[in-house]
Length: 126
Image 1: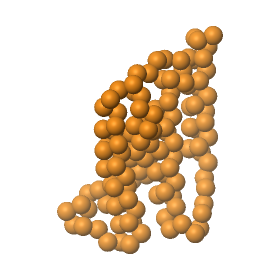
Image 2 (image 1 turned 180 degrees about the vertical axis):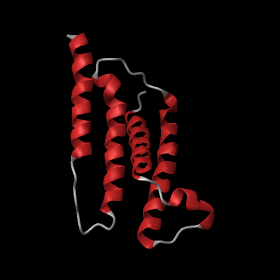
Image 3 (image 1 turned 30 degrees about the vertical axis):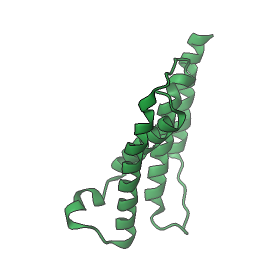
Image 4 (image 1 turned 135 degrees about the vertical axis):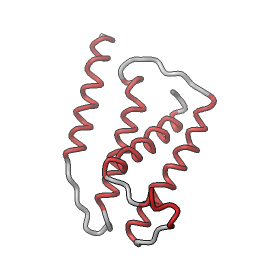
């Protein structure tokens, strides 16, 4: 039964992630919603990556240092917030122009990092 669970759960999570990636959502009230959607998609993927080992039946350990993941999550959240504000207002700091306009792939990667760090720190298990 454990082998079946270890094989089926990742496939089901992958199917859910693919369904999320192929869905297109539009909210006209939110300015630049595609930016928000990419970050939310990445955060969902990060949460999937965080729970995948324990959902597949592999053990997870409590670690006293998982609270430090909040620091990385907070820095990533500030980065995403800065990018969104510079996208909406058009105002960017010259020395930070490299990170002010990320591509869609980078927004998903940043969202994945934000979701993984936050969800793993919230669970307190690695």
